[in-house]
Length: 421
Image (cartoon, rainbow, N blue to C red; front, side, top):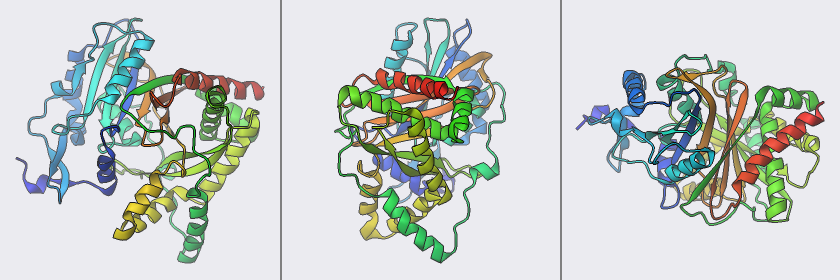
């Protein structure tokens, strides 16, 4: 048994994420690495690779331990890579539909809390390539940390994907007077509750469905910049909103405005914490049919949030309120309310250059994130060189025909591209 000195206490974010896990919600995230090449990835070779590099990621050899009063991470003295890198539970090679089904089934399963909270499943593909389905508990890593682990354990070469300190660091808080004035406006913007229920608000079960989409990153970057000086993230929100509007028109009919939660990484350069995220939210119009008008509205919203540093202030505000015992439950409910936001859309920068695993090129890199109670859809975008990959995760009972949403993302990206010509 590790000595008490070896205990690394859980930070508040990790404790909150662990507390979220329930009979219907699994607390992990997932990276799906689709490899090309003629040779299929060998589980044995992957185990050797991970074994050789695991010392560079000691957090991945720790399990939950400590006591109820002082939970934390402790070294797993029985750590065995063979228990974490396995052949996927399928009879043989899978096609695209089979891969989606496999990812959905694996995502429904819980990670073993008596071991380090991650697992890689390797599946052969019918086209001759392979897919690596890597689940990591969100208490162990957020999106930024997950990519750091991928660089450490998997990529043959580090493509220098780290963002600059200026990009990753948030601005310092203003003086107290300005800070208090900002918080008043922040509360009005972020926690106003909509009068209508979102079409994504429903009772969450245990079944998951996933879908993938991919668009050209340079094309999206250039067209949104040329149209109105918007950012790639604005473009991501615009095409996801357009896809959702198409799905709502086909399935529900009512088109209104929903609030989208946009996660923001608060990691600093050299920051090794596993989880450090915040977010701001924007109201996005579903009734807008003009893709350029939709993009401009979203750009106006996000520009205001960024200028006011809403993500940083949200983190400070909720920490301060949560420290008051009588307010802790109120803050938790407010932070997760389906009326506070309807959809979570994340966009994480991935490798800027092509990468490979054991000389097999990574053709696509998808991120799948868990949904939440009354939030039946989650969309995660991650870049890989010139490709922007979208991973969609949904409750299979609340969101039907998820593939239409994925197809809509690609259609909306093409519509913006056509408009910019």
